[in-house]
Image 1 (cartoon, rainbow, N blue to C red):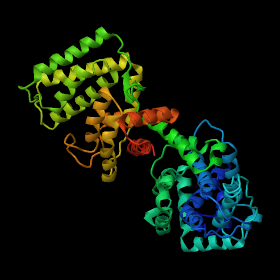
Image 2 (image 1 turned 180 degrees about the horizontal axis):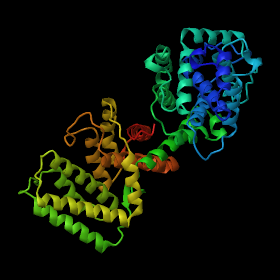
Image 3 (image 1 turned 45 degrees about the vertical axis):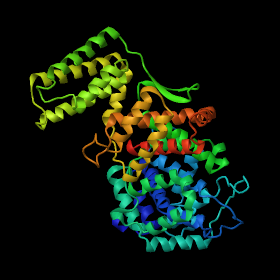
Length: 501
């Protein structure tokens, strides 16, 4: 009986794997091999960027990290077990590659599992389409020099300790999910990774998706498996066009997923005459009933002002008034704003900042009745609330707050009506202006949904029609590059805030 503590080389790992139930042996083998390859990304990337990769039997004057990253991304999607999809050739080929590497004698039977996994994965990496001549470079045998180099890594950087740790995790949970690549923050490639980003220099922006993705894997941060799966399955023809084409396809997918995680019951539209974006809310169902519900809120608000702790300057009063006057025909806005007010009012009463009076309770009940009415009349709004209920918004770092703040003038200028007004008030709130008392708190949901959800839909529209950007440039004087970079940057922030990536 081989215990996990006994795993010190390929033979002992193989013996331990063969002791496991037959139905999990392949999954365990694949997961272990994948994680080893993932840990080596900084070193492989550095050697690729600096052209120091060990010579691979042939003239490789120009080779890209993109195929290597594509494979690893595909494996991340496979490891996270995206349901109801049959792996395509990429998944099958790479899966076979990793698993067979644990047993194959022609790759390096005398070397450790880490070596054979590394060799097999490199064989697959470099058999993918080359950007150099548009043809495949097939390397059937990795040179001994590279395998020996991998052997040194195994000894020096404690890969076997991490393999044993992965085995324990697999044995306990049958999967490896949201688990840092190196336990106890003992990342031996930290300096190498810093060098990679330094070496990329200004080009780092072009590789930002891949940098963010690797660092999420490195630290075990949750990622959206469905989104990664879609990115991994970008058409081969796009991958062959190179990094710029892949980045454009990734941007489309990211915007789609951000929009999905920040839904609003409205349509984003573009007025070609004014060259501005605007939103059209869905029509209110049963207007007479909604009118009654809103009138009850208005009457209840009037009854509790002044004598019950609320004043015209209270934030909740301002929000309710604004909704009643400007958004009474917008079901999504009514539901979001009134839900926010109910939570706030209940919290203030609980903390005894607001009097627990009959009038205040009546206001809360009237707000709740209106919210329930909206959800019952508009299933799409109720569905959005279910998405919001599980959202865990992440706080914005100071640098990201600055990026968001600097985007306000542009977003206000390229939109009109209530949409423009919302950007003018929501963005200061998101960057923790006076409306948020705790500077380091996560952004409140309604403004976050409006800003990031709307910008994601703007990006999808812009991607479909270059005429939109041309009209904005003609109308506002903003440069096309600035518009595209700003919108793309806000989408990236949104993905982080909503935990999509």
